[in-house]
Figure: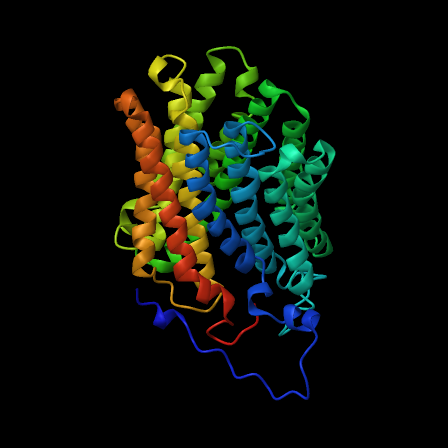
Length: 420
């Protein structure tokens, strides 16, 4: 694996009369300079470790003191663990660009101590809160339920405040929705902890649908932007009418389970069509030779596919199972997570926007996992166990490859010497 061109040797440390205090060293550590660095690494580590653990628990019945039944724990950790960490890394990083040059904004200093979003020790504290949530969910059966609830639910409101403060200071109204969406997601997490078996599953479904709304919002901004920048000749179109239609219909799917049939399924089908038409306007076929782009386009395509499957499941019994949700979680969520982490990590560390070869393999494995988990059981229900093994293993390897390739990139200073 050749990643040398993405790295540079760290600058020699200046001479010092004695060892620096630990707090000062942590405050200046490159891996705590900006939110994407620690959160992307820990999210990828979680994906590489939690998926094999899930397979062992589910397929072999290994008892662990989980805070919920194994299926609910698995779904909860996908949303409130993996997805929440990547959202934290992306939003805390993107907020720097959102408020740059606006009234009340501050430029980050060389060591990040005056940054508009957490860095150094505050960022480490936020990361520690997220890690604590994963621990209490893993051993929650031997802990007081109130402690599990407080520790796990605290992360998203804290993240919302950390994001809202600089946005409010800069009066960046365009992005006020993101802190509010994080609070709604936190509310769904609270419902998960307080609810019974049925309510937990409803909270998980709603949280996955809410994450889909966030993916449509963020994907609609960055995917065509990245495509236009990397491929100036691509005919990328971004009609406002398509953006509004796709976003509103995707948001309305949160209410679809409450609506009478067939209105709910029709909304899902409409959202699926709207998102696929929107994607077609971004010239996805022009990205086939650029892995950092096609992974994002293909990930977004799975949003539309998942919504179509959920809508059609009202009339096609074979689609009424878990296939649509796994198309959304494995294909769309994990595909966009891996693609965004790979692209953002290179761009924000001043390195070439070219996917290391191993990451092309990782991108491919994510969509192998999506086909195995969402489509294979539809074609051959008897292969459900095989689909679980293939999907879980492929995803775990994909996230492990990210850790191996990006660990030195995310833990070293920027290649161009700039802060962040």
